[in-house]
Image (cartoon, rainbow, N blue to C red; front, top):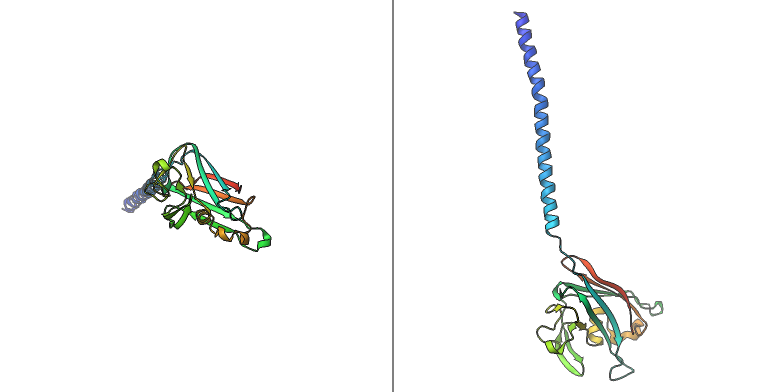
Length: 215
């Protein structure tokens, strides 16, 4: 009788010992499956949201056109598209940095323009007062005058052969982040260096990055 009881207890113990590893393996499988599903979902979202950065050859210039008064020149920023992908300007951000000479005791000046930047009011372009224009505007009279529908920054697609412009010192001041009419206080003029970055907003990648010397 004692042998039978011992035998049953021994068999029960062996069965319990066998069940424990099986449960452990099943739990490990469940955890592995959950982790794999999480990683797969995360990777899918990450790759699904990746935006392709347009490839375009852009060039940026800041020039002094002399204006009607050589003693008070107008400074114009021009951005030229020399080839490659067309880019909606609503997808562009223009960022600038200008470090005034140490003698002027002015801090680094920073400007930023997107399609949501407020328009410039009553700006003189080619001798004509424009009531409202968002710079840099599309400089193509065949597609409209500055300030007209389709020429304001954010309204048009920037394509090969296009030139966009700030129109004058007022518009350039918006892009650079300081009043160019007070340029003597900032030591700004021909020979000044401005760092310019143009960012593609959907991908957050650079379309252009360079140091521009004012001409």
